[in-house]
Length: 100
Image (tube, rainbow, N blue to C red):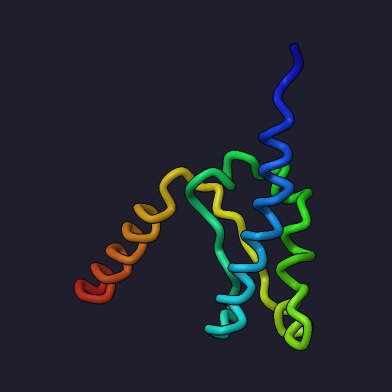
């Protein structure tokens, strides 16, 4: 018995749908600095995600295509990005307060 085709079929559907919703949010809120995707299942399938139609669908915003094209997308692969960010912020705050 071979592997089930369902994981591939789900990804084929998930990536474009995910891209469409993220692009709508990015254009609505003016996310010119980029859209960061992390957590959940996407980082586990980074290679498949990179090869998917995500970016093409993200940019397909009709009148806003040029705007969406200029917005970078990033896939967060770090194990603990929230903790890493919190630690960096705390370190910066301590340096600001204590001067070293």
